[in-house]
Image 1 (tube, rainbow over the protein chains, first blue to last red):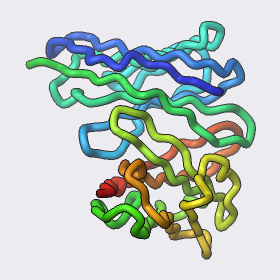
Image 2 (cartoon, one colour; image 1 turned 90 degrees about the vertical axis):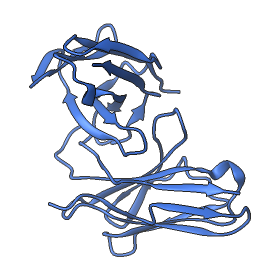
Image 3 (tube, rainbow over the protein chains, first blue to last red; image 1 turned 135 degrees about the vertical axis):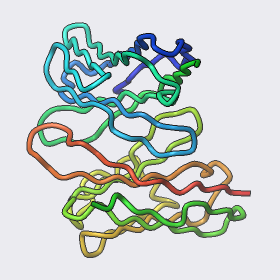
Image 4 (cartoon, rainbow over the protein chains, first blue to last red; image 1 turned 180 degrees about the vertical axis):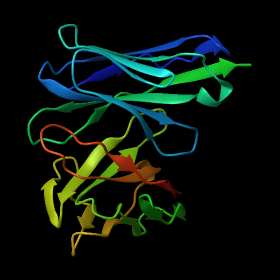
Length: 112
Length: 116
């Protein structure tokens, strides 16, 4: 059973702070990693994808991947109240298998 | 570019009744997914289509759930008969294969089903 674990939160940070969201996965063969943002009552929206060890930056968002530790994280710099949402970590295998396994998500609240 | 379209957005039915959900993927996306999302959980894959072929339906409860994608574009997911435990959000997603590994999936707005 492939598992993706996330702290359910809520994670509360003040506006302007760095929010750090973490995710661990059980399948060592995983090759594709995604972070989705989901506002309450809305569908998941892709934030970042990462495939190689190290950091990937996109604006205020940085994804970090460590395959040896089976760990992926998302950092949100200069957090804004509009970043308040549930963040879903999704992990996919390599090759031609496109099945993603999602974590339960971490609820982030950014306080003004 | 239009996103993934789903209808209806909300559906309330009584248990044992049938229900159907419709999805139109992003133009050019030949991979289509149906997910189920319960409150406080991540999406769980029900079925994946490559064009009109269901290539992964291992998580689809086939006794009551069925799906089709006859022309490789639009798809319909049906539940018959619905049970109380089927109350959830049904999400459709689509992706375009770029080769090697999981491709980026784009989600539709979902259908929130309530079974009374």
